[in-house]
Amino acid sequence: MAVWLIGPFLVVLALMLLSWWRAARQGSRLRVARMNGARSEAALSDAVAEAVTRLRGQELAHRARVDALESFIVQLAEAVPAGLIVVSPEGHIRLLNKWATQWLRVPEPATGRVLWSVEGTDALRDLGTACLSARTRRNGTVAGPQADGGASYPVATIPLTSATGDIDGLLYLIDHEKVS
Image (cartoon, rainbow, N blue to C red; front, side, top):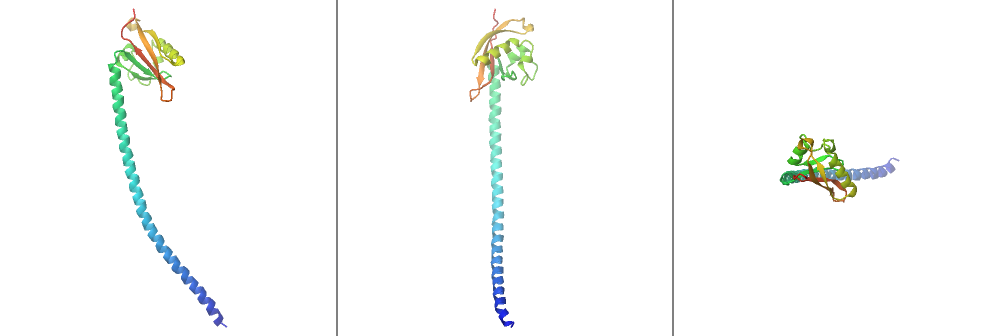
C-alpha cells in the first residue's frame, strides 16, 4: 500500500530539487548582477562628481566674466564726460558715476537707494515719468542742488529696454555745462 505513495513522493522530490537548483542558479545571477550594479553605481557616482566639478569650473569662469564686465562698465561710466545715472523703473539706483554722486550729494553706497528720496531730484523724477509713459527719449533741464547755486543742467533721459522689449530702467545723462 505504501508503494503507490513512493512514485508521487519521488516526483515531488524531483520537482523540489529542480526548483532548488533553479533558485540557486538565479541567486548566483543576482549576486553577479549586484556586483555589476555596484560597479555601475561607482561609475555613475564618478560621472556625477566629474559633471559637478565641470559645472563648478564653468560657474567660476562665468562669474569671472561677469565681474570683469561690471568693472568695465564702472570704468566706462567714470570716463563718460557727463553725469550718468541708471535707475530701475521704480527709481532704485543701479549706477551713478562720481560726478553725479557729488552733484546730488548721495551718500555711499548709492546702489539700491531710491533716487527720488534724494533731495532735489523732483525734476529728474518728473522727466523720468514722462520718459516712461512716452517710452522714448525725453530732454529737459534740471536745476542742480542748492549748494550748486541752483544752476540748471541739460538732461537727456533714455528708456532702457530688456531683450523682450519691456522697459527695464532709465538712463540720465546730465551735461556738465550749466545752462545760463
